[in-house]
Amino acid sequence: QVQLVESGGGSVQAWGSLRLSCAASGITVSDFCMGWFRQPPAKDREGVAIIDTYSGTFYAAAVQGRFAISKDNAKNTLYLQMSSLNPEDTAMYYCAAYSSSRRGCVSFASSYNYWGQGTQVTVSS
Image 1 (cartoon, rainbow, N blue to C red):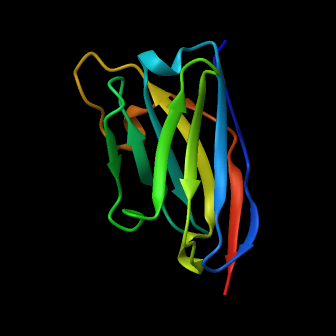
Image 2 (cartoon, rainbow, N blue to C red):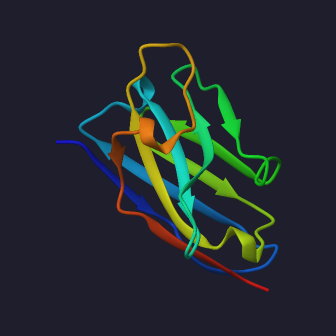
């Protein structure tokens, strides 16, 4: 049984930082496309950052230079370091995974078949 468990969300003031963690079981993060997605209130879910099996990364334009995705294969855990947060970053953040037969990973949420329960991030001005 696959489980992805996020933690590290919370409330922070603008320009603050948070680090999200996603502990995986039932899959090996080194073998899967892993991603962070977010869903702001009353908006669609959007891709934030992706890391592939070669540790190549992709970021949404809105977070480029402020967020960093990484993984610890020994701990089987995915991370998202978020800096210079602003109120537009307020959302529920989800960890997700899928197994790709190709090199590289996509950022479409529909391609990801394993999801965590989410962790709330709230940024106040």
